[in-house]
Structures are given as C-alpha cells and as structure tokens.
Image (cartoon, one colour):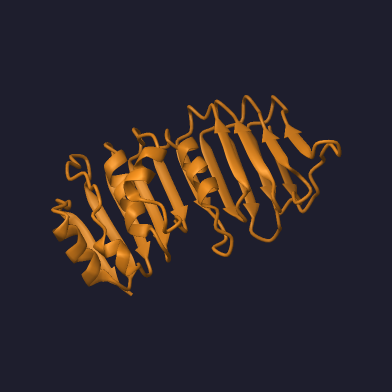
Length: 238
C-alpha cells in the first residue's frame, strides 16, 4: 500500500504538538512539502514500511523533530529543511539513504544523530556535509558507531569539515568500495589538521573527486597522511 501526501498540513494534537503515522499496512510513504512547522514531534512508526521519501525543499518545518521506527525500512530519502533532531531507532533493514538539506540551516547535532541512525546502510548519499568547526575529528569519531555495511559513499561539501568527514568514513567503513566526492572548497585548517586516517582499506576500489577547486591540496593531503589510494583514483578540478 502506498500513501503520498503533498502540500497538506499534517494533523497534530494541540496539547503536545505530536503527529503520528502508525498505519501498519503502508509499504511506501511519500511526503512532499507538507506543513510541519506547528509540530514538535513527527512520529513515523509503520511496521511494514519499506520506502520512505520526504521532500521539504519548499516548506518550512520550524522546530519539528522527527522520530522514525520502521524495522523493515529499506530506502530512506530526505531533502530540504533539516529537522530540529532525528530520532532514528530500529532501522536494522535500512540499505539505501539519500540525505540532503538546505545549506542555509545547519544543525550539526541533528546531522550527528541522523548519521548514527544510518549505520546499517550499504549506500549513503550526503549533501551537503557540514560540521561545527569546533568539533575535533577524534571527538567526531567517537560520536558514530562503525558503518559496517557501507559500500558506496557519495558526499558533497562546500564548507567546513569536509575533509574531517571523509576521514571519519574512511576510518569507520571497513567494507567501503567506492567513494564519490564533490568538494567545492575546504578551509586551510582542514588541510593542516592531523587526522586519524585508517590506511587499511582492503576493499576500497575507487575514489572519484569531482568539481574540486582544491585538487592539488587534496592530492598532497592524501600523500602527507600516508594514505594508500586505490588504483582507480580520479581527482578532477572544476
């Protein structure tokens, strides 16, 4: 059973601002520009749900938090404004994630909690990746559990922390086979930071860097950290 809602206001309890979707028969759920700015918590708990797509690119969601508890969810796509927080539990079947948000609203804590919930994914697309400059890389490494199943990573970044984020994924993803990066720019402190790269990527087959305005810095950075790159490494400037 498929449910698609577009440009509607999600119902909520006026007493606590909660809205819940708990229909057990849904297997596919699509939400496009639904009004959520009056909500405090949006709870999706559909036991049979396999595919979930949320597009908030043209709708403000205010300070709403989202809670997702769907043990059979395979695919999750979320674009647009970031939620105040992501409470992702029981996503043991999750395989494919596309997670993108508006660059004008950064929420490092929300991004951190979302990534924790994506730890079982085999394919992960992130755009953009942004962390607070005050976050230390080794501190960030402790925030996430290992991405034990991750094989494909596509990451776009045009602001602080892109190199540190790359270090996290290379260190915490032992099954990673292919990486595609769009790095538009990086700060000087990113290149100079001593990052804990794991150089034992036995399964990594290819790294492709696109639209890179700092290709020489990136090449030197890998060399300075003694990172053994796979034979299929392609770094292209913009």
